[in-house]
Amino acid sequence: MSDKSASKVTVSFIVPGQPVGQGRPRFTSRGRFPHAVDPPKSRQYKNLVKRLAHDAYQGEPLDGPIKIHLIHCFEIPKSYSKKRKKACLEGIERPTKKPDIDNVYKGVADAMSGIIYCDDKQVVEDIQEQWYALEPCVKVYITQI
Image (tube, rainbow, N blue to C red; front, side):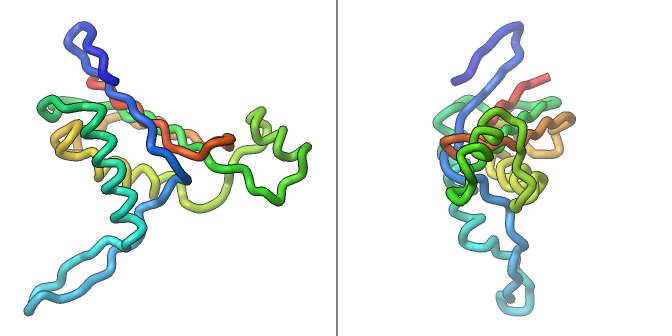
């Protein structure tokens, strides 16, 4: 889903499932040199984001400043009462649990680098939100500024 207006590009897509934070890399050595390896869960999530980003945008990576807006939608815990579930869906109660909001951002931003934009250093503005929803996902919006 991309939209070209006044030569600015907006790309959006949805990553289904619970948001996954970027895990701490594990270090191994190849010969005499250390090598960082993403944890399997982070690597799988980043690969999913890469596939969805590629499906949403097939052009050359954008250059110049970029704005990223992420909406993290978490599943409501099954143990919550009906009243508490209603409060979650109305936005009265918001998630304050792991993964940290910045760890989800880091994994998603890294995965889109080289596909939607050249490098994540181009990101000059980001907006992040955490909500509860019936269907967990991360909604991604990238706008060329």
